[in-house]
Amino acid sequence: DAKTTQPNSMESNEEEPVHLPCNHSTISGTDYIHWYRQLPSQGPEYVIHGLTSNVNNRMASLAIAEDRKSSTLILHRATLRDAAVYYCILNFYNQGGKLIFGQGTELSVKP
Amino acid sequence: DVKVTQSSRYLVKRTGEKVFLECVQDMDHENMFWYRQDPGLGLRLIYFSYDVKMKEKGDIPEGYSVSREKKERFSLILESASTNQTSMYLCASSLDRGYTEAFFGQGTRLTVV
Image (cartoon, rainbow over all chains, first blue to last red; front, side, top):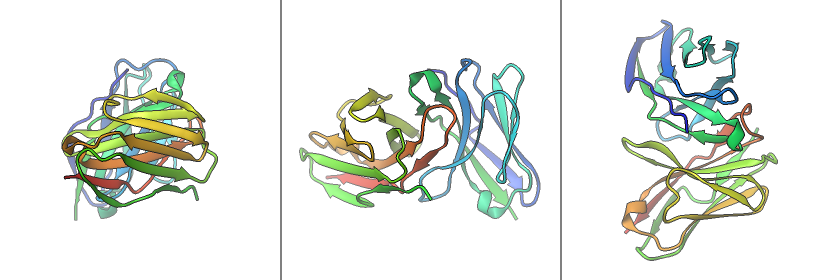
């Protein structure tokens, strides 16, 4: 199964943009790129997903490289509530939608 | 709102016991998943199911089995609990494969003594 690689941790200042990178060099053409985040003592929650084109929603933006081997989650203005572990994962369409999580990036936000 | 409900938030069982972890979703989702989460190891997929009575092994199925007799319910079974199965267990569901988001339950903290 294709895997994702993320930095273990990142720091940001409040109200500044945050760019969280993810490498998925062995992604196949039908795999969707999903991002989830997990706040302390909670289950993961969905943030955003995409296949080829960049995506925006109320929470974040997802920028996908043209060759699809990497992607970046963009939080436009970090808040203290955005401090969490962010997971970049692949949704394996041809394997029934199997979701395999990586280690994630722990984002800390400084006031 | 989609709700994924796990039967227990905290559970303590003895070594060798048969343990059932139950998960119910209320949005007619096709896919359901069981993960365990351990410090430093992230979320690891145990089993998932893409239809009633269908199941697929994840990365760490050893020591576990699953049952999905009805679409809304996905059970994780520890046939003979061991101390190395002490963990946080998370259930999730999604409408379909690939392009739909997954919803997670709050988790069950299982301690095997």
